Image (cartoon, rainbow, N blue to C red; front, side):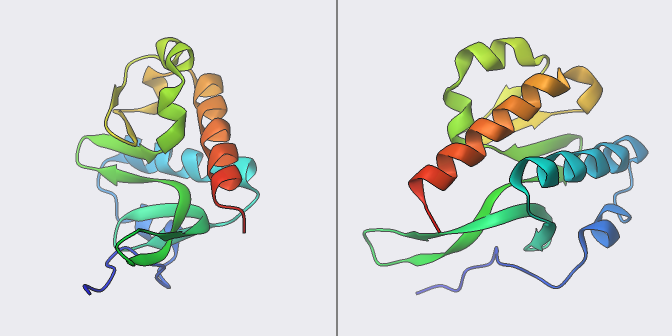
Length: 138
């Protein structure tokens, strides 16, 4: 079985943020760290080379593949912030109020925090965390 690539690393999230070239993304990343730490009650940790994650859960697939992953988190990608909010993407009414964004299977993509309603974003993250904790109790 292949080794899991996205796992906890000893790298400090703040040192990773300092390597982000775009000043707006650095600022937004620091704000997201504070927001997600407040919501999860857990400190930021690096998962793999580019994901800042909060809390964790253990998954196991029917195939037998299993591992740990962050409960929620984000990554500053080129030109976009990718937020891992999974189940919150089912909240269509909240997404309508969020502002300028795109979605993927379990990701929310935004260019900058000033494009969205931060209160709605906090609610989305809270919904995602609550649902993950319900589905994967520790």
